[in-house]
Length: 74
Image (cartoon, rainbow, N blue to C red; front, side):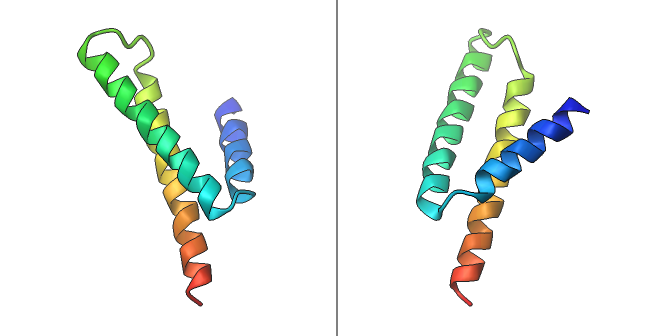
């Protein structure tokens, strides 16, 4: 179950960040996804699982941003 530990570490890391830091993390993750897709198209991507991992990271970040926005609007 090492993936569960890594996901928990990532959740703990993201929960401690503010909205600005989350947005910078989101920009970095989206850039990484774009680069991975580009490398996949050129047949240079060796770890195709990185695409899914990056998409999941983006979803986690967006979830935390939504939580912050919901708390701010209350």
